[in-house]
Length: 452
Image 1 (cartoon, helix red, strand yellow):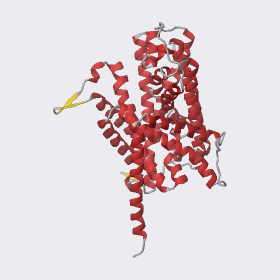
Image 2 (cartoon, helix red, strand yellow):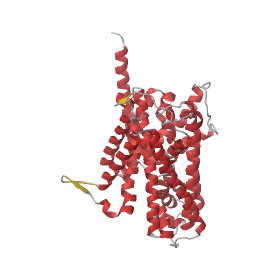
Image 3 (cartoon, helix red, strand yellow):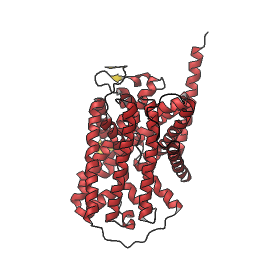
Image 4 (tube, helix red, strand yellow):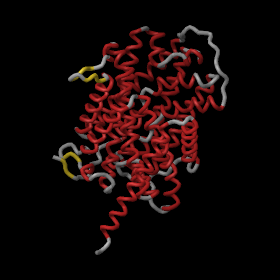
């Protein structure tokens, strides 16, 4: 049986940090470097893009840290945007995250795990369709569905249990990849140079190369979604955001240095998936399997973190009357937002049935950018509107840090728009529809409140 209760503050610094690191550390750092290498003409430009991505992520983390410390509530961006821009914008952005950002992200990683990592670990036969009652069902969809259901069930068992799972799924790949990258750099081994030429560094190339970098760092805001469940959140939440972003940025730079120590820039551009390619050069097939297993564990950590944090949005909206009332229920035994969790899983499965990995990336990416930009802007709005309210943490480098993040996100959105990326139209469509629904609901509420 589920009931309406308030969540308890169980989470300390390291589990909260794992919720920042986990969603960031996915397959992006392995498929992104070859894409970046193909877009730039020098190793210095390659590394500068990854440094720029880390700086941008840190600017975002520093910005939301102030909001999270000021408003220590579960729900993340929805809570901050509702406070800064009003109920209508909060409603629209909340539904954008519930319908696009989180289920799209969960579906992308779950399908990618079944498509790319598991066939290496268990053989190509795992790709064969599954026939049930005469229906041929893609095995990747079945695997992804099982993974989503399993991780949702883990999160149903409560925040303490799921955060411990998150800590393990995050710590193991982080430590192992750090050590492996340092060993690779120290070994001095390299792949044979193909002798292929390379492109010159241009503004267009830098812009194209920055896209995979930006998305590889996505997830720096993970802890804000459980702000109401973090102990001493005014101090712990900012520290978790800053620590997690610093750890991932450092790891990414060490990994990129390791990739370049094995491959020339032209060779890296042709490597496909950098982690497995480097392992194959140094250790053969055994190395490929080992790195693929690490990537799979990291992806499970990313998925668990996204499932956990995403479920808090619908819960927070339901508490405010902006989502169906059952969404506000917490499990009587485990204290988890049970309705929100399983609704998120159901919608994710629907999206995975409709589209593949690339489709879901296109579905969610612009929505993520728009939400982050509006949240960073909310730091300016709330400082101006509520100057005297206590702020346990104030954004380091204000006003430059939120401005840098906003500018970076706008640039990426502009690039997506110029490329006619469908995620831009999807985002606009959901926002317009949500605002229209909000206006209809607001008029109905007003008419019911009027006497007579």
